[in-house]
Amino acid sequence: MESKHAELPVFADTVRDFDVRTLREVDRVVGGLSGSRLVVTGSYAVEMLTRVPLSHDDIDINVFTEDKATDLPQIAIKLESLDSYRPYMQTDSGLGYFVGSRHGSFTPRRLEMQFVEVEEASEFASVFTLKGTDFAVPTVSLPLVDSAGSESIFRVKSLSFLIATWAIRISGAAEKQKRDVRASDVDHFRLLLTRDHDREDVLLAMSRHPQMPKGIPESKVLSDALRKANNTL
Image (cartoon, rainbow, N blue to C red; front, top):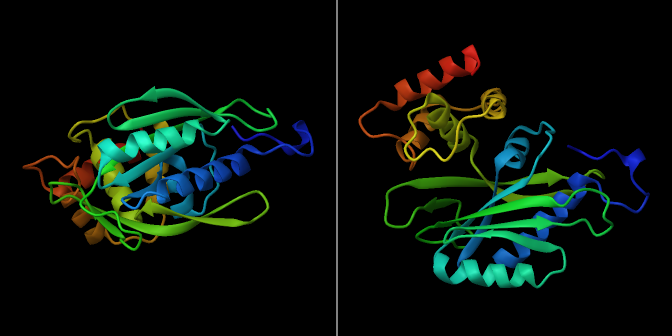
């Protein structure tokens, strides 16, 4: 939940400003490695794609990397050398931190990072191919605005890809579903659908998506998701 200015000392961070600064800090760490790129995911990605302000329970990031085994521990060492990052999780493909406000104005924020191996993670790439597969993830660079109206530019997955992702999950057909679908997921799916998008681009993204089940037409999975979203889960 967003903190209200009136409840904080004048020098304190708002949650949004703190999150934006955290993303910039982590982006610098990740971008300092030649084979890794930060991609904002979760509710912040939905906000950036729709320009609709949302509340955010945590900060979610993908790190597209050419070498997960090398880059993950290097990034962990760099982040843990900073005072405000307290680790609570480290796996072969993820890092989790509680990140504290410098002024202690609000509960430490949860930062979750999932590492995804790709064939090439160059600075200028916009489409990333998952290593050893034909799966492709298109990205775009968009601004995230802080409380003063200042913009910070980050990569996010494209609108079509994010719609495809939620369609596959909400349909119930997803391969390797990571968790149950939440009401907020459906809300975000509906919000994404209000933005100008091409159905054929969504279907193409679904066809190249790692969670798309084999043997089921993309159009059926999309229709099932739309029906479930309209009926409310």
